[in-house]
Length: 144
Image (tube, rainbow, N blue to C red; front, side, top):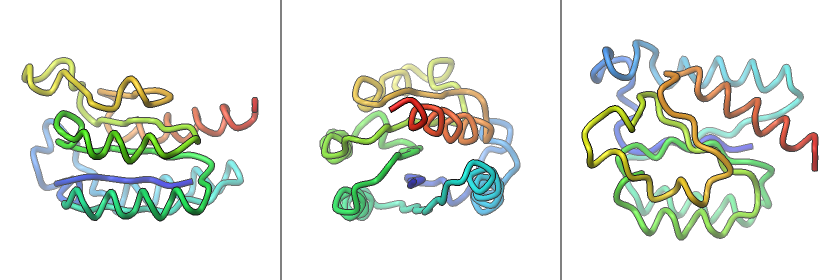
């Protein structure tokens, strides 16, 4: 299973902790690794501040026939048709995660370019949203 994080998420714990929390991305990834192991899953993590690099990674993931994707696209959520098109290549479950509740923020953050193609969206649960996504995909895989 793959976890993809978009622009500025490498600054978690430093950037607006009152909105995004105090945990850094490395800490979140460590917690997720332990949780995944308990479920018998292995995670591959990826973060980039560059849209094209993220798309290249999605293309690589597509070739590997993934079982699931957890993605926090950051600001690309609201702007990137290219990211949407790249994710449409995938036939696995995709869960979109946002640390803050994007629907309670500025109006430009309310629209997700991915929401209608994702299996599900988790927004506003802080870093626990990643754990919820992991558990959701695990449960989904148990039913197919």
